Image (cartoon, rainbow, N blue to C red; front, side, top):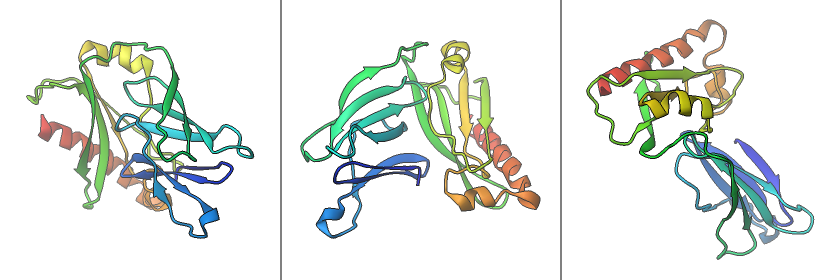
Length: 207
């Protein structure tokens, strides 16, 4: 669970599934608390947040979306209209040229066999020949998940110059709930470093 909000008739849930944001709605007035997946028409591998425009009067929500290569975008969506699509209203300024860049997700295997996801941002036609300078980032602490976010400094100083940027979702964070965080506490803290090293080894093996 990453977030929740109420509108007039709906409970809106934002969840992380394999570090990918999914939005689900529940309409309690139907008498069945069953979550329905919500299509938002935003790019893949984006961080999504929803908030009510007026929780007492309507089912219209603000839709906020951002990714590693796309600035924050704000839109509107009416949950009460099954045919409605997200109306994008405004986007933050682009601070670097993201043309030709791609965001992909990969998985490494840590020392104890646990699969560790990571994001890779770089050229879409990257030559996997071991010659690509790469900066890795990770933060496994306080149950905080590292999800896609626009970073103008990294984009301008590194990505636009041909570098590859990697975000490792190591244990200790909140990508998979409390258990993911608790599995790297105290005497088990070494797992966070094992995970980071596993991602590095996977990058080398992939070239």
